[in-house]
Amino acid sequence: MAWINAVLSTPNSIARIDAEVNILAGGTIHQCYKGDGSSGIVFPEEIVRIEWYDPNGTKTSEKFTKSWIVPDGEYVFRIVGYDRTETRIAEYNCDEGVEMIALDISGNGNHAELDSTALHATYTVSANWLDKIAMAKKIIGRKLENQLSAQGYNVDESNGKVLLDIIVNPELFDICSDYLTLHLIYTDLANAMGREMYWTKAEFYHRVFKDHFDVAAKAINLDTTLDGKVDRYRANVFSTTRHKR
Image 1 (cartoon, rainbow, N blue to C red):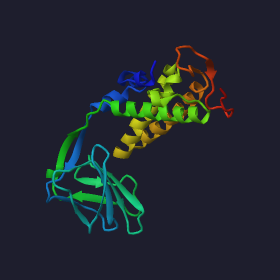
Image 2 (cartoon, rainbow, N blue to C red):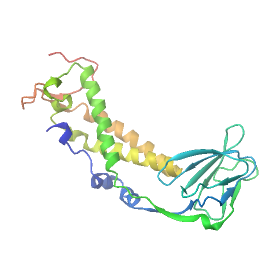
Image 3 (tube, rainbow, N blue to C red):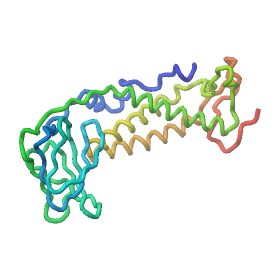
């Protein structure tokens, strides 16, 4: 099977490992703040710069004096506050009501208050994770391609041949792809929402991915001449011994 046609992961295959991902894909984030160009948030005077995140995880840095006007039409889901020494002293999730209490308080508390309750809004995040599935396959493919090249394997690419196509059993990497996809998903969610649980999941899935990848890489069957016949069984392409034709 050509590598380009190999389906390593699907939304259903990753959901079999972690059912929450399909719920998150169609989830609605409630009570973001939507800027109207005039209403803002009053921060404690120790905070002189913030980084704010929209519901999709895009980060923007802003400097201000005490009060920050939420940009017109922008949705704000999470805010991180920094003092004059660029130390993070407060973190706010914007669904906590009119008075936002910092999650990581230093000193005597870092509350922030809204100028107006009119900022409250909802924002729906929709995703089916196909972009993360495609990214995981690309990452795995590059790792394998680099190692095959380092081991001395090659094909005549001038004739349209693809080095990864010498791998006869790409399905070995199905479960690896599932775990790597979950790592990518929860890394994005952690960056967007700042929830420790998502960081924990991202790190866990990356460790499991590496474990499964190392095992799969030792069981690859190769058709080095692309003639439809396996000529190397259980080739350990990550061996320190270089392949010789």
